[in-house]
Length: 177
Image 1 (cartoon, rainbow, N blue to C red):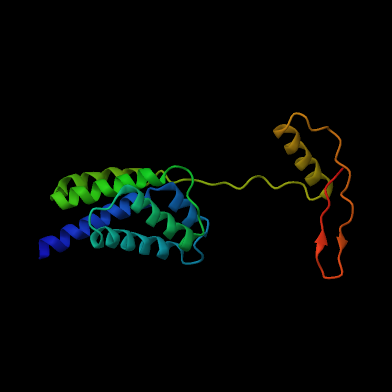
Image 2 (image 1 turned 90 degrees about the vertical axis):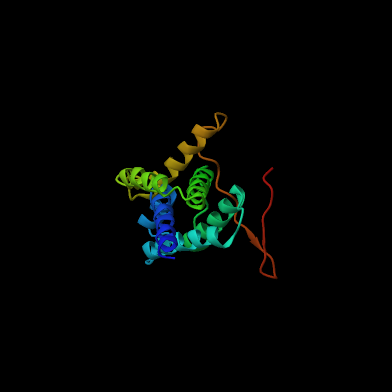
């Protein structure tokens, strides 16, 4: 029983290594997407994911992806759309397969490899602050429109007519002619 508990502990450390090197989770924790307890949620995520593998036999990759995506959305208000979720799921499934086969040395090697990569954390930098005058913001928005659509004229569009409030409180939005 002690060997089983230590091997399960090794699998948990493998899950921790995979998730701690995942840039999406790093960014979510570092930027407070999970609130003030983001790091505790990340630790909890490790426990929940490893338990998910032990509780469910013959998991498919899409099931693991869906489970982790749901947890990231609920706990970190983060939608993972950078195509890294399939890679994380495959890594976790490979670890679990190695654990089931008793290939504990392979798991240790994977953990050591990932531990070396832990120093390479994802960095997110805020864009430089823009000028405080309101006119600069309008110019920036106009320039963004120009770059995305070559047919936009360089003059600012005329201001929209004031909306009309109906008697029941609804605002009528009319199509431009």
